[in-house]
Image 1 (cartoon, one colour):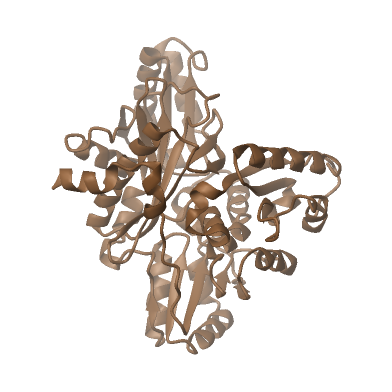
Image 2: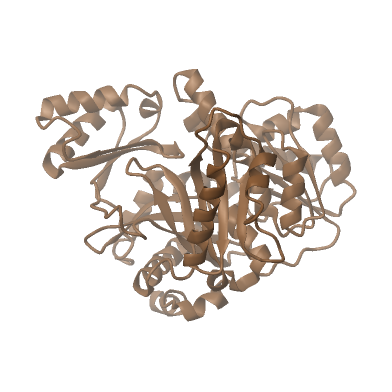
Length: 482
């Protein structure tokens, strides 16, 4: 059985990717789509443990600032309701509609903002009543979220109790909802790798252990560091690169007791290290200058269990482990690496599907200098690339993977003391801003971060050279206002 499946799925070449990436986007009539951007809700167990409180709110606001990005996760929808944790300006909504085929989007923002947006929605009596009354005009409500959380499941149940026909095509059934947190945790994917070693030897992770408590973690990590001249510590749950410590040769004391003490001190700076299991891993030797050091692949498991590979990409990651963007194109990885991560990805997807997981997920990997490709973690939710994938699929169709080179970044900083605005940035980039006539250019992914002197953007070019030239043109234009 294993060999038959492997032949069917895993011997994947770039010539076959167009078939794999085919997608049915037909929408049923008289169906209301509601998308909830519950990113903080998904990471609440981690974010709520961050101390001091000021730092916690800073990270929560940072997460919420990406809300506008996920309007683009609905690029193919003609009409939908978007539940956002922050206000979205009309001019950005209009900009989103000018790029996509969307005719109407209603944006609902709950008055109370606890971080648990689904709960905030159903406890906002007026807003929830308005939503339900509108939904009752449709035969079916398709409820979709960034992640399947307990609050999302509760929201669905309340809407059903009020007489709505609600479906959740991108969420597991309630009896299988445990798969979200289990496979989305670093300990869960590690357990799956250990169980699968005999049947899928290519599914490997960095050598490591799982422990509980800062004291034991400091002892084990110090031992690993002294022996291997490097170590990585991770919380079971994290957010945007937080909850990861990477130590290389020379960054910690060389004697064991001093090393243990220093690691313990660093673990004591944030409360979340005490709340979650801690994973201690070997440090993989990576060529950080090499393009393709961090491959990634995203899948979707449909409600009927069908597995669909959406795309693979190369992630941009700092030495400290913080993600800041990606490149998507069929040529970002060589044939051998592309086949390898597709092979491993389908194997993991089959395991998830067997256990009842449904919806989007991705797999972060590391390409070591030893030619091994290691699975790092899996995100069982919408991902850092889902919104981008949905946008380019809407714009270019099923051949997007070969027809367009996608470059996405979230690390541009405005240096000037003058506050920038979305309108000013849009005007500055007018010569290269994406439009349907030229079918390439710059897409501003979000307006909200601009107030914090940050720009999130996506570059769409006919090939890699053109995409990177457009990015350089963008930087030169921004220098005039920066």
